[in-house]
Length: 115
Image (tube, rainbow, N blue to C red; front, side, top):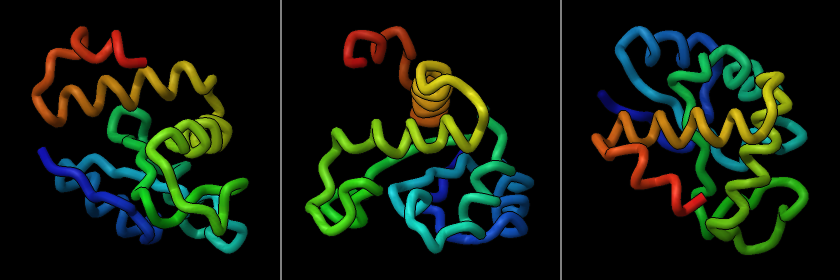
């Protein structure tokens, strides 16, 4: 298993990575006004292969553009991705936490206390 961090490519590239078994991680870039191609890729990636991140201190998500990115802003990315995927943010948080645990071979129950 592997993952592609700060994914900024198109749907076709996402498909190739998924075929190779990758998880794909989206950062605040997906919230940028000119990122429609990236949003199309994000809609395409299945929930069970999705991760979210901040890439702090860079690339703060909307509505924080121009500010220093902080790890806590991952919630903004998750909320945006939940809308794109048509799921509740709580579901997206659970799915991405489970994906993280599976990818890094961590007992998911150990992560419950940090949410």
